[in-house]
Image (cartoon, rainbow, N blue to C red; front, top):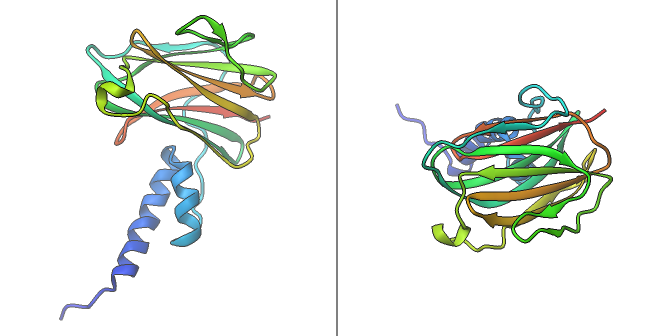
Length: 192
């Protein structure tokens, strides 16, 4: 005998599973929105990868044609997470390092970013968002209070590189990972 299932119950069950996945993989903005309305909060995972303050780099796959579609910042227990959402084809590369003076690489002018330390995130293998049908103004979402992140600015795309600068209270160890489905670069900044 088949049991009749209410659509709302199915949706809540699917979202509960999705929330566990999203929280662990960088979907902190979605999980905060959905958690309050459909499911109980899930246990959050720790930072991805090994964190240290050294520069980190990886070359993109050739050819990559990815566009930055959004930047999300959120707080987790013991770390802050910056997620750079990407759309398109290929595997992104990156160069991430601390800088004392944030500069917009596209024009060589100083960037106005609040903070005492600045993490410069460069995503390689990117195209202008309009080439994939998106607005060139990339939205930056801050999900509530964070432990160390004060500000984040999307500084644009130029010659295959997109730049995001994160303003911090202090320079702390961080890790960089690429996650898929959807593609995104995740930077976890460990709190003291």
